[in-house]
Length: 517
Image 1 (spheres, rainbow, N blue to C red):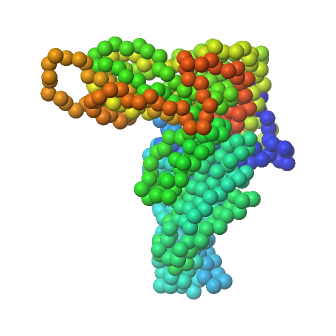
Image 2 (tube, rainbow, N blue to C red; image 1 turned 120 degrees about the vertical axis):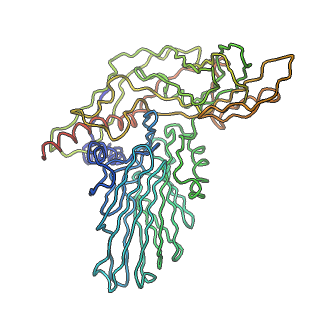
Image 3 (cartoon, one colour; image 1 turned 135 degrees about the vertical axis):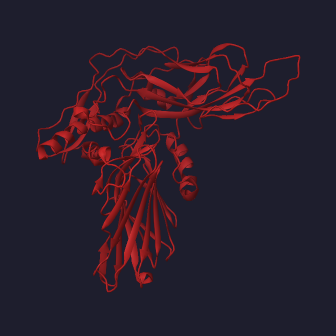
């Protein structure tokens, strides 16, 4: 694999521009956020990672936030898409012909890696207007969400107009859906750089907010007058962006969240739209089992060569299987590569004007021999001990090869969990554990719950067989042959480039900081 350098005005610049925020975040990941204690007096919090998203930098003077891309802290999975926002959260107050941009005089910073982070900022308009006004901002970042809550106080606050500006990072985004109080941005062209689904919701106790958007620049704004409380909430949903059929499923998942955002704020969401489906399984309490599960895999996933990349093996994580059972991944043989496939990332000399986002090019020709079976299968084995019907979350991802992520230089601490994989595919497996047959009639007891799964008591027969994801031609393991796949690695290369950008810019950023000291 090669890495191409994206120079200004090159044909590939539009690819790099969408990922620039991630590169900038990566270049400063080893900054203040890794080492600062809570309540530290800092000007910027370079990286904020929740359970599912990495944000940053957060400017603790202006209250603005950048980036927002999928990263699952447990176990450490890089998502599918570029950062969601170039910037969001810039507040401007105006009155007559005068205006004031929010600037904090005091600040309190409480970051919590993998959890809920809170930044509290307070600023005063001073002599910008005839009267002085105090603005307190609470920025709360949790799960897939970030929320700016502005409190505006002063004698004539009802005469002020407040505007919050932002910009979607994916300026190639071709669709922005709007309602009276929400914006939902997404990209309908899978050939463009991968964009997360980005949502914005606003509310005010003043006049009804007015939302504006610019499809060319990605900029948007929300404006209200006479508000003492103005709130803007951002939502980022990662999904398998290189699978066209996944977009409809992801939008159907996201729209209700945005419409009722207060009820969902702070939640951690999986990546919707994965074209992988397990048929329901049934076992008997106390009876050993070792069986291959019937699995349906969307044709689009097969065509892109997801399971065929040399060095990146598919791995499965099942949370909350019935006690006594295990789920095992069995990988088929991968096509042979005609040339070396180890990634090589080249960077320009210091001072050369480039966009610091390496895009990996996979120059691997795969043997297109027809496969008689699916390239992956799953086995359920063990002896279940507790009756019940279990709905088990399952995540399939590509494990990173050893040494693919260089880590922090000079023993510095990473401000986020070290990545172990990328491109998560989320689905569920329903397992019914039927009670063993007995001539006795013991007193029934409620089944014990296993963390991570949903369990209900068992009474009648096995649950219905699962169905193929809607609108996606698929291959079911053991029921049909797998068509030849050409291993379209180009569809996967962009997010791998992001991963390389994070790792490589960690090193560059550390060197530049040391040189400046």
